[in-house]
Length: 188
Image (tube, rainbow, N blue to C red; front, top):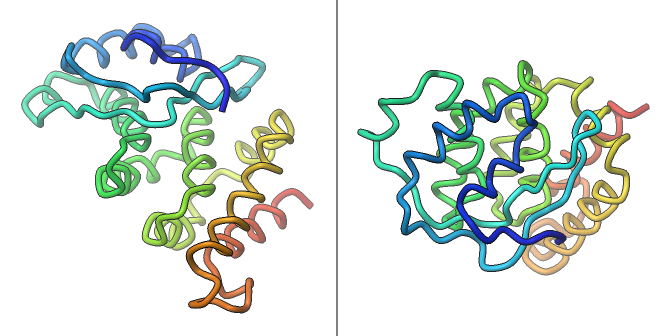
């Protein structure tokens, strides 16, 4: 982890600069007493821009607040909430966001971070929907972030070893490795 998020408006740095106007509107609906990750963000590069993706965020606007957003702004907010501390909230927002992953390269870093996490249902959902991922976005993202990709591979290995090795003694049966194999095939 690198970087520090100290104020809600620092979240603007989680997205490319061309989205700044949309993001400011999105951040305006997040409750001002929201707590962000207490320390870290993931520093990643997308199309030459440095993004700071929060490790965890802790507040979620209610549905009435979301009604004031445009469709693009809702996608931004849902993408941001794939970083929520609650796995159910991450999964709920992932289910909304993944259908747009082929159209928006800025969703890719958020999806890649999720692949390096331990919640089986999220990994399985990404795997089941891998056909909607944009291979060009993923290849470009990994070329710009090779160190992150190696760390992602290590995380998948660690979570399998810690939580799923007994259930899936053969690595190839674990969905995290299946996702990495799918990505590795894209890279060839």
